[in-house]
Length: 79
Figure (tube, rainbow, N blue to C red):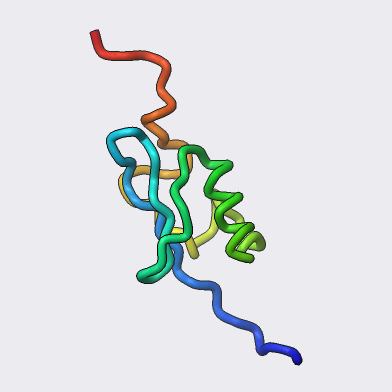
């Protein structure tokens, strides 16, 4: 059974939480929680959306910072 080409869903990477993790959702569905860009790639792969170019796709809305913003990964601390 062949399926017609499906539209890719609109994916949202939410602003970082206090621990730096970012929720990845499509519509009302949470696909996963990411702590790094690689996690976003893996979450999309597991959701069978791995054809999306994570850092450059218009299908992904990065809220509260882009693909390089992962504040939980910072090595320095406020004094």
